Image (cartoon, rainbow, N blue to C red; front, side, top):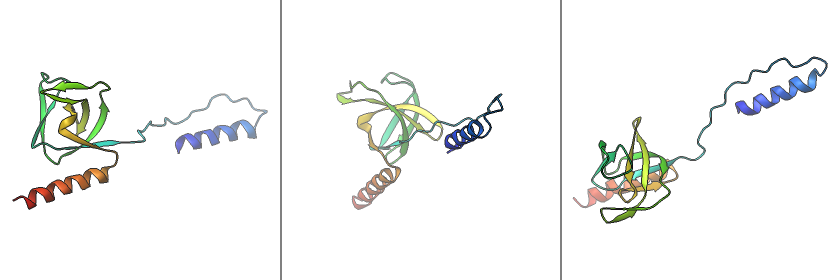
Length: 129
C-alpha cells in the first residue's frame, strides 16, 4: 500500500509542476513481507530442535506432539537420517530458530489447516485413552 502511495505521490509531483525541478524525493521504506507462510505440526511425541541441519548439531530446545511452528525454509536436497529420507527444515517457534528433520513434522500452507491437524491429534489421543 505504501509503495502505491509513493508512486502516486511521485506521479503527482512530476506531472503537476514540470517547470520546477525536482530537488529530492523522500520515500518511506516499504517492508518486504513474505506472501505465503508455511507451518509445521510436530507429529512425534518429543522432537529435538537442533542448532544446525545435521544430527550431530547441539540441541536448541524440544517440542512436543501437536506444537505448531513457522517454517522459514526447507533444504533443497534430501538426506537419510537414522534410516529416514527427508529434508532439513529451518523453523521458528516463540522467537527461537532451529532445525528439524522433515519426517518428524507435517507441513501446511495455511495456519487454520495446521490447527485442524492439531485438533485431530487431540481427538485421536482422547479416543485412545
